[in-house]
Length: 329
Image (tube, rainbow, N blue to C red; front, top):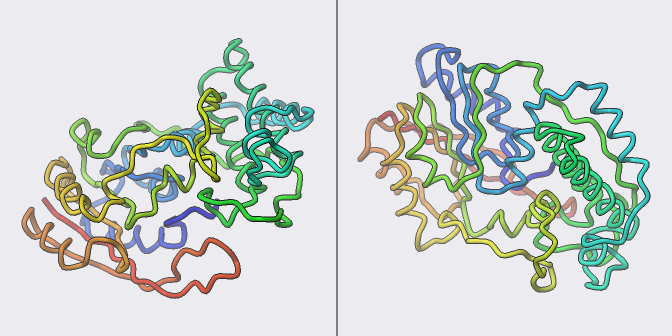
């Protein structure tokens, strides 16, 4: 997925800074990715640490990160994907509200893909409700559908808007493909779907990695359709031109709230090492973050220059500076 704020290209930089800064073997450490997103950083560290925690308040994130650890046998997984791929489309909620020929007129998907999403999502739910598949298998299939959906969505990477005409990728037929999963039987992995500032009192460990929103781009809005497909709570009425669902705005996305909520999180967390990714274009300036961390312990900082996220191929990427702030409590 071309995910807003993804640290895929920065994972090596983050790993090098953390491994050198911690000063002892990562294999003896616990690691927490508190704003996990699609799980890129946690997945990079999962086989290098003693135990790991993922968290994100978005349900689609919980689904995707959980699927990485699924233990469903590969042969059985591929067999059901084959069955799902052969389903005929049905004109259901996604078709009507978010596809080319739907009554709502929202062009997120072609007619064929909108109907196929409804058919597959309904079939997955039936299998789970009838106990044909267990929770692990259910989550794995949902994650597989989300990844497939993202490849044929008629968007510029995010779902806060759709394109006026179908792009080439959106005209291709949706196909479920097996996801890459870890082969490691991790001794201790926990995955949460909670608000970070509420969860923080329930967890503790050695290394806490923070990658919160940097500005007003609200992930509940930018990826609302992934939550809708994952939850398939089709009784709600999509709002506005983009078909939004109701959500609570993150305080990290509010300029008036972010300094207080960040300091609260840093102050209350029970981790020895706290690493915060934040770039030079975020609501919080470098000086503010350094003052926060210096008031709570020993502070260090590393940085790297890189290309900023772009939502479509026609945009000029530009450059930005990514800081990795380090607090030793």
